[in-house]
Amino acid sequence: MKTFIMNDKNIPAVAKLMEAIKPEWWSYEGALKQLSDARNNIGWLIGDDEHNPKGWLLCSDDDYALFLNLECMGFDDAGSFSTGEQLQALFEKAEAYARSKKYPVLRYMIGTSEMSSFQKQELSEYWRQALDEIKSIDVSTDDFLFKFGFRPTGFIPNCYGDGHHAVILIKTLRRITQ
Image (cartoon, rainbow, N blue to C red; front, side):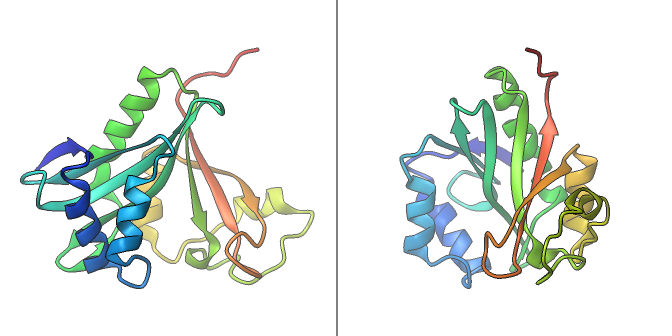
């Protein structure tokens, strides 16, 4: 499969894919809006051609914060939504883009609904220990993220509702100096 940068011509095909493999998260209109949002989005898709995508990775480019934020991703695994190794070529594109802009990190936030150890728990003052104890329900996705160099660095409490926290994952791309 080949990789392509997202543009106005192929975004509708990606929106159809998003709705087809994860309709509980995206309607076609909602996916199209997210992909077309004017907030400095950049994304890539993977497929045999750019009008029949099998997967995508959407990022927001935040010049002010000096990082590339991974917004959403997915892959059509025989009709089922998946993330992980099938998207490696797109992660590599995002990393190369971030490095070209001299960003120090890639950032991704994952909800604790996918983390068995923190679903619906209060985050106590011992959050550093909590980061060390993160256990995943979907091991294949998290194994890929960890192999690719992402590490948990913090939480955003109740980000997705009561007891549904976000775990902030980053991949360091260069040393940050003052």
